[in-house]
Length: 546
Image (cartoon, rainbow, N blue to C red):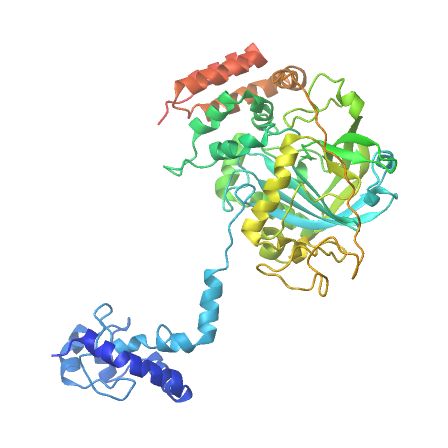
């Protein structure tokens, strides 16, 4: 007797050819059959199928005795699929032959399967809004020729994105984590990105340590759980991160909302004025709403009750017309001054004393419009510290130079080689890069008709690149404890010191390796003995590790 499999295989190819060649006739027949099966079965059909579409046990005898007419018109009661126990030709609806020629179904499914793109490896979850930056003070023009600052009242469109660093795109907004604070200026001279955080310093000063640092903050590769051992082991072995750690575990470690936190460019930049003179500078966003933070208990409660708390807060307030704003300020020093200070001005783990290098106002950013589509304008929003305009250049800050390479490469991985052509990332004016041609999602509109090479002296004029050497900055002294000590002893109140110790101890209590705790406590002692004692006392009261 011919098996169901051999029968199907022997008839499959001719039948497929008939369907593909005959086209409309077969499709119409299948469509009519589908409409019949969609109706509630009556009579003998009720005996064949239950509500799920599988043969009824009570209909087994009937199925054996009655002849089932298939879609080709032949009669064969034995053609049942062994997996579903349905008549084998029932699969020839939207999941088989008609599915192959139903281009609408194929397009819908194929697009759905490709809707998601790789999320950012850091700063995965974020919220963004559009707004305006308006110049309120032109004093910065003494130090830079950047034209976006050249007139009081000059307005430049911006987009700002706020994010958590370590968590995934579905993580809670109120975890204790550094917040990203990135702003893109759509200037007439190109896009300028300040890609910063809500803390003025970073954990490391050398980009070679960035990957290990992020791995220590992410999930354990074996268990996929957060790993306090890895978190504190990195701190213990690289104590330059202590300055940022103290800020992170202080009372300012969990902002109440992204509307109520400062922002910092973190890195040191180089400004070039109209006379060609160079200066070092740091940029700061001072929150006009004032600073508000959450204690750990409130943050934990919100993480469970409303994990999208910060995202919702910004969207709702802008929709109500409660537009948040920040004042952009900068610190500046000459290259000669940089050689005289007692710390490395190009070290991202260090701050510049405000008393010695005061903040100078530049202008105000106001966010007044929510995004129209999250994926198009937030997920595809691409920042890069390498995006600078004439008059603003990179300094020899090693972290900045490393970020200038890694950020664009990360965007190429996530969004494709032509990510800069995505509308939210485009320049305010038409941009031409003749050497960047083709690739995935290339539209061909950017430089139609131009040769794809340089140099060329026809078919368009191109601005000659201004050559500026990055230079070297040799600094042998590496004092990693002075600034954390000043923060602890001169800035934090007595209550803030107790809160800091408790927050640290609550997190360190999960560390299972005693040698890691011992090393970290030793570092705390180098900052201040009270800090070490307070953390030790809090650890002694912590509940036993599970």
